[in-house]
Length: 188
Figure 1 (tube, one colour):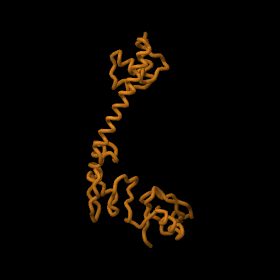
Figure 2 (tube, one colour):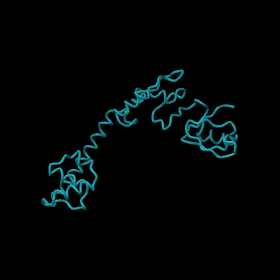
Figure 3 (cartoon, rainbow, N blue to C red):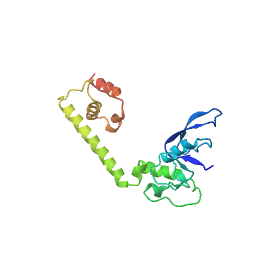
Figure 4 (cartoon, rainbow, N blue to C red):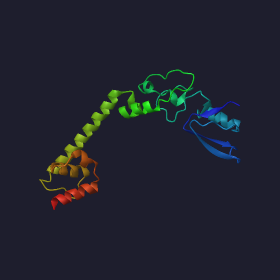
């Protein structure tokens, strides 16, 4: 019998491999047991849940193209940058550390192929922070020098404490309850 492998995220089959006839959930990459009923196998093949072994790359949640014969081993730094996977007969050397380094240096996998996208995301995040800070500073100015009360937003509390000489980077990471306590302590 030909070997079939799950290529969808998962597939249900009825099997006796556990000693009892039961329904089993198989995840991407798993091989189908040999006792799967022919009509179920046809359903799984027609629906794109399974394929012949090696026909389709089955790395979990593959965001990049892979060589079906090598699977995840075909994902290299060049593939993350958008190039086709290199053809090969067998598994390549372990490149997982280098791939992890590229991904962590350049952001998410889908952004690793587009350095301009990484910079655009960083610019957008910086603009959002600047807009939040400006809005909080406006609310703080409306208080005419008074300290914000316990109902103030975290951003307003942070801006008040920054105006008192605190570091924005440190205060932005602080818990709102801690920020309220710091404001209250400064009022005493």
